[in-house]
Length: 150
Image 1 (tube, rainbow, N blue to C red):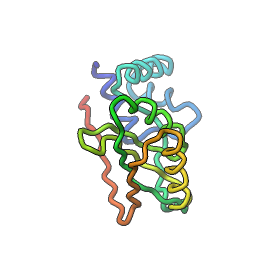
Image 2 (image 1 turned 45 degrees about the vertical axis):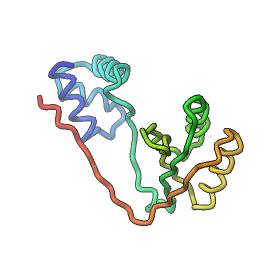
Image 3 (image 1 turned 90 degrees about the horizontal axis):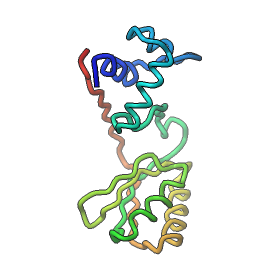
């Protein structure tokens, strides 16, 4: 990762341009072409440095609710379980943890009932019955930007 990549990372974390050609704007700011910007970002994704580029919204302001969910999944069923969980559009994060509840995921839906219904479906599809639903009671949002220097 060179200085240009670091500059690109700083821009896309903090001030992603909302325009028809955001990669041209980013490229112009760091002194490269739109195509090179796209290629560099694709490479950073391939290397696992960038996980995703997308908008983030506050589900509460849109009338949605969210839950943190935890499941006890046998090692041999993790891949299948995660694939099924990730097929639901309300899943925003999904992580494996070193804990008896080893799969943790965030679920956003129009209501708690929708999340509960989906969790029952997931349980029926996977055979995993020990899934905890921990609805949001108090919301803490921590924003993290990683200053990559220049």
